[in-house]
Image (tube, rainbow, N blue to C red):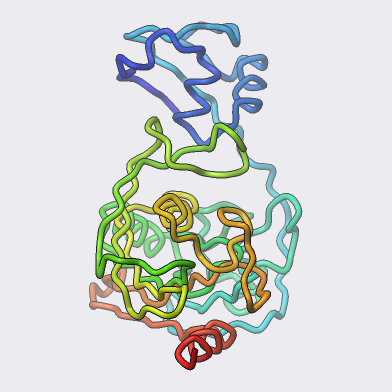
Amino acid sequence: MEITDIDEADIGKRIDLYLANNTEFSRVNIQRLIENEKILVNGKKIKVSYKIQKNDVIFIEIEEPKETSIIAQNIPLEILYEDKDIIIVNKPKGMVVHPANGNPDGTLVNAIMAICKDSLSGIGGEIRPGIVHRLDKDTSGAIIIAKNDIAHIKISEQIKNHQVEKTYIALVRGIVKENEATIDMPIGRSQKDRKKMAVNKNGKNAITHFKVIERFKNYTLLEIKIETGRTHQIRVHLTEIGYPIVGDSVYSNGKNEWNIQGQCLHAKSLKFKHPITGKEMFIEAPIPEYFEKIIQELKKS
C-alpha cells in the first residue's frame, strides 16, 4: 500500500497517528509495523515519532493473513438465487461471513463450501473463497458469492463503480422527522475506541440515503441505500444523527423492549448486472421472522 498526496492539515503529525486515522490499521498495529520496518517513508525506515512532511511517500507492506484450512460444514442456508457463476443467499443474523480470530468455523464460507464444493472463486484466498462483499455478523440479508474468478472480478468492479444497488431496512429508536434525507459524513476508526468506527473528518467518504417507510410510537422503520460501503456505515451514520438501530449493542446502548441480540438491520435487496450474461438482476431477501414480528407488534401499538 502506497500513500501520497498528504493533506496540508496533516503535515507535522506523528506518522502513527496519521496512519491510524487514514488506514484500517490501529495505532498499535502501525507502531508494530514501523518497529518491524514494514513501513517506509521515501524508501527509508523511520521511527514511530516521525513527523509527516508534505511530499512524503509512505509505503506499507501488507502482511498476508495466515491461511488456514477451511472445513465444509452442513449449515442450512436460504438460497435466493444460484447458477454456475454466482450464488446469492439470505445470511442469517449472528453468522460471521468468513473465518477470523474467535470465529474459526460456523461461518458463511463454511456453509457455502458444503453447497458449492470446489466451485468458488479463489481471489479472496483460502479463508475468503467466493466472498465479494460482506455483511456484519448481526446484519441479515442478501449477499453475493462468486463461483469463479471472472464472476468475482466483474462483481467487484460493479461494487467499486457503485453499480450494485444495495437496499436495507432498519428499525431505529426515535421518530425521524424528515421523510427522506442523505447523510454525507466521513467515517474512520474511532479515536476513543479502536474497535469501533466513527464519523471522523479524516475518515473516508461515506454517503447514506434513507427514507421513512413507517413511523411508530418511539420508533421509525427506514429504507436505506448506500453509495459507499464503509465498515459499519449505516449503524454509525444513524447513531450520529440521533437514531440508533434497535438492538445495536456497539453503537447504542443496545436496550430494547423485545430483548433481541443484534441490530434490526436487514439487507433487503440487491440490484446489479449478472457478471457473465449482463442480465439485470433483482434479488430480494425475506425479512427475518423476529424482525417482522416486531414490526407487526409496533403496528398494533
